[in-house]
Length: 112
Length: 110
Image 1 (tube, each protein chain N blue to C red):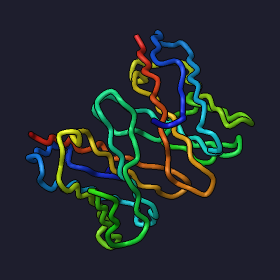
Image 2: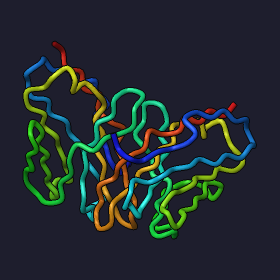
Image 3: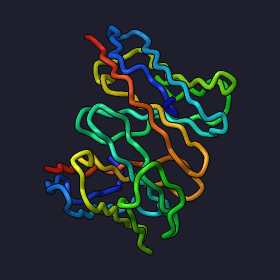
């Protein structure tokens, strides 16, 4: 089991609302990545943060935004929720000078 | 074309057999390749990674990389029922983007 934690575990929102998901990285890990995993699919890369700056972004619209804090914890914010945003949201943290990602348990978001 | 392609399976093998999982990728500039295992309802866990052409062994697992063919594989020797899971291939592409395949479901029958 990794030291990456995520909150909340489950969340139900309605279309049009906004949501904030949180991730606490494993100690010493200064890079965090966020993924969306729909049922039966592989994780889709949303973005990566390194030293509080966005360091790479996948094909997600601007209503998906993030933050990384000095203690390397992170947030994923999604505005104007759509039904298709229903998925498992995973964060993964990485040690400096490494590409090995360690995933948290995920947050299951349901949009009604 | 997807960045990473995997056969969705399911791949069924008897206990003790070798399971062979395959993955192709589209970005020739990719440098790093990863295999993750994901049990139902759980998050992915890293099995191993490979950066150079050839084979890399770790216990019962062997990763194989052929950059010319843009092909990565994972062999699992002496497969156990506990190996039954979805195996995800991941590639680190340009601009710090990670691409995952959709995964191959492996069933190891006792």
